[in-house]
Image (cartoon, rainbow, N blue to C red; front, side, top):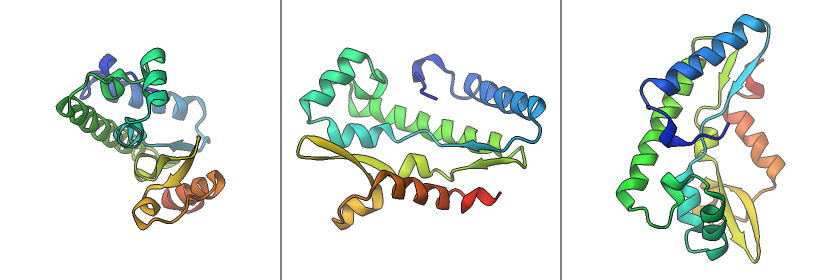
Length: 156
């Protein structure tokens, strides 16, 4: 689910929509297992790629998350988006906790992945590996790590 932050009142509309969606899933499919992923860290994306003219061109042309990625934004504006992401992730976590068949990723989706440029390609790598200078891992391995962080085989 991609969010346009400007369209949501953090405390009310987003929480209401998330709770209503999970309630509808629970009511319509009471045996369904639900996995809720945290919202990715858009600030990390910006911090890694804001110096890349191709990324800036794509963000601008496609209008991708302009509340964070617009080149004219200030650091204060970007930090407001970071705060909204944290609030949204807390709402997602709390809403998921209302249902026994719902699993939250423990913020793994928010904190685990970043894009790293190597040559002309971009690779997904675990965020904690960047500081250690360890080469990136494959997408499948990163996703497996996310599953483990989210409750080890999701606890099902």
